[in-house]
Image 1 (tube, rainbow, N blue to C red):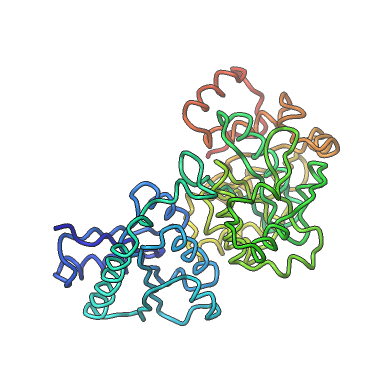
Image 2 (spheres, helix red, strand yellow):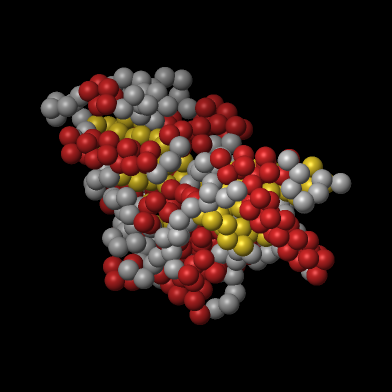
Length: 421
């Protein structure tokens, strides 16, 4: 007889290990259990897409905030028969309403004894079994529901951030969106501007969007239909082929956008697009930290000046404390020039993980902004375009990487030293 299937979401695997030990030791749930730990929230949707619904989702202390609870709530909406247990060591940094919306069937205070954990899991499995018996047709993956994910599962989320303004976040985000659209083999791309107070994506692309992120959220509040099924109505198609969901036009509107709102927007967009590029404000705000939790890759921008380099060092230290895996962080040194009092080699010594790209200061970038087109589209032969494209090619599916490599010149001029990935 098969035992329960338990998915444990927490940045630390200790809770998952205790769950497995309790079930294997003979907790009264029957059969051989399956316990799967998940330490990164963005992976949950893909796990459920690949493996189907689990019997119980146990959300650990890393979800004990508004953003974490909002994500758990979205998972619960997609898999309504799966029992959710919140296992927290302290009171969540959220309102009671956020806890209720997460849809948990039980709350477990940590640290918990093996007996307490076993009893909690037994109750959750029992509730799951009763729900399945009452409504078996709901026990399915959400692939055919309104706002369903692309054919390959939920879209990949890439975020661009920096600790200092003027480092080229929007430049990077717009060109990344164009590159993935142009070379991704027909994949759909959306650029989401979550610099919600002073977003510049629309200006950089010379677009005049009719709707914004704020408008999409307002509709959800007044309309019971799924946000994912209508999210494209609030986007604008750029002439180069990728979609844009613009930042609010009024900075005062940004004050009404909460971290759970950010989770809902990103989740809705990735249900409809293969790639989601997120531009963020030049600070480590709640919006940025929530977005990081949803992202697969993070591009951190800096420029060749001491304040920017120092702030990036602080930024990276903060990411470590937030337990953002180092392998998902890519460093980009932008606007690099010679004879400015600091050398690229000096900066490299400060960041031994290396730079994904070192991009020269280039007048083609200013021209591209003035015409409202990414530099990869307006000046594909420019040195900066070749360097930027070379740093992004490994984001493509393997077959597109091969096609892109064949289309490139055999030799390219290099700016400074060759940079490690």
